[in-house]
Image (cartoon, rainbow, N blue to C red; front, side, top):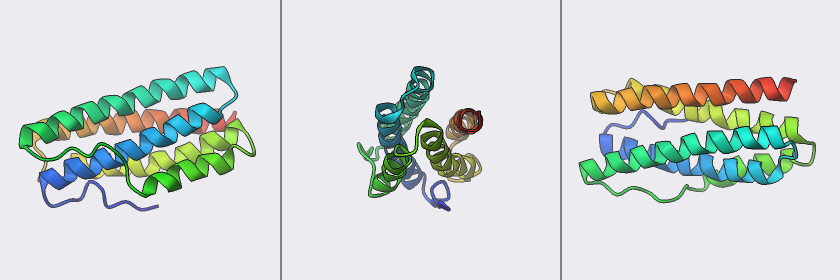
Length: 148
């Protein structure tokens, strides 16, 4: 899936859309935690979910600083991200992690775009680069765990 999140032409909309994307990601993480059997994989996913919750906290802080509404939930895309996990769970943990890895592609792309977006403040771009690094780390682990 190709995302346009991160390419917005106002900082307010950029922050709002990243928050929606993060809420969708958290829903997918919650679904994954419920469906994984392996305790070690489950613990890693809990750790990664905490990164997303940290991103939400920072994006919410940014929204407050610029006086814009901070979305508190995802959108319809949440059903796509969690639906993949539900279908994958029929096959097993490795398939669940592969499905989660595909979700990370969109989040990585969004933060990559956001880090290069001229409407973002320098402080925000630094945060977006850190979030991109988090998403890259998540995807790398998921790909490796799914292949093992």
